[in-house]
Image (tube, rainbow, N blue to C red):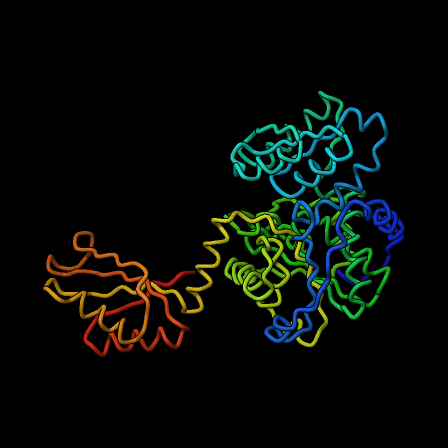
Length: 412
C-alpha cells in the first residue's frame, strides 16, 4: 500500500466515476453528509458522516448495481441478470432491476435469514436458495449464468460496480470539502476502490484508510502478503469476506494508505453510539469507520474525517442485543451474582439494599441446585439498572460491606 497516484493505469478512471454519477443521479438519493459535533468531541477529530443508510434499500450498494444495470444492452436487459448475495447487493440489484423492467435472479445461501430473503423478494427478484455458504451460492449463480444466458453482476470485482461506488466520494468531497481523511469499510473492496480513485482525482492530498473486522482481515492480509485466519460470527457481516476481489486488490495496493482492524466490541460500541447520538440505525459494517476512530484515536487526532455509513440493514433482534450489551459495558445494566445462606430473609435483605441505593431490579434468578456450593448454599443472580458505572460500583461496595459475597457477570 502506498501513495502512488498512477490513476491512469487503473481499470477504473475518474471519468468513469463521473459518468456513473451522471447516470445514476436521477434514480438514487443524494444522501446528506453532515458534521457530528458530539462524535467529534468524543474522538478528538472533526467527524463528517455520509448517511448512505438513507438510500431506498438502506445501503450504498444501489449505486454500483444501478450503474451496471444501466450499461446493459437491450438483449442483456431482456434476458435478465443474476447475482449471488445474501445482503445489500441483492436488494440493490432486485430493486433497480425491477424498476427498469430487467428480470433479476438472486442466489442466496439456504441459511440466509428469512427477513433478508423476504426483503429481496419484495423488490421483485426471483430467489434461488442454494448451498450452505456464499461460495456455494456464488458457484451456483455462475452455473445459472451460463445455463440461462444471464448477465452476472459481481458484488465488488467489476469496474462498473466500482465506478458506481466511487460516486459516494464525489458527493462527500463536494458537500464537505474540508475532509482530509476518508475511513472506509472493506469487504471485497469495491467501495474503497471507487472512493479512492475519485478522492485522489478530486483531492490528491486526501488520505484513504481502510477498515476491516478483525475476524475477516482478508484484504489486509493480501496487502501484507500474509495468510491470516478469516472466520467467525461478526456483527459486520457485510464486510465478512474471505476473498477480496482481484481488481480491487490492485487498486487498494496503489491508493490506500493503511488498513486498520477493529474487534467486535468496538463495532458494537460504534453501532450503539450512532443510534444513541445520531439517532440513525447502522449495520455493523456501516459502523466500521467509527469503530476505527474509537480504536485508534491518536491515528486520527485533529484530522477532518469522512465516514460513509454504508448501510442500515441490521436484524432488529441483533440490534437489541448490541444496545443492551452497550448498556452493560457502560455499567448501566448489570448482572450481579450474590451468594446467600439458605434461611428466611436473605433475599429480602439484598432487595432492601437495592432499594436504598435506588437501583432498579430487572430480573432475579434464584439457584439452589446447580451450584458448586454446599446444599445450604444459594446463588442469586440479579439483573439491575443503574445510573452509571460509579453508581454500580457503589452498589457492589455496599453489598460487600453488608457481608454479602458478590461478583459481576461481565461480557466480552
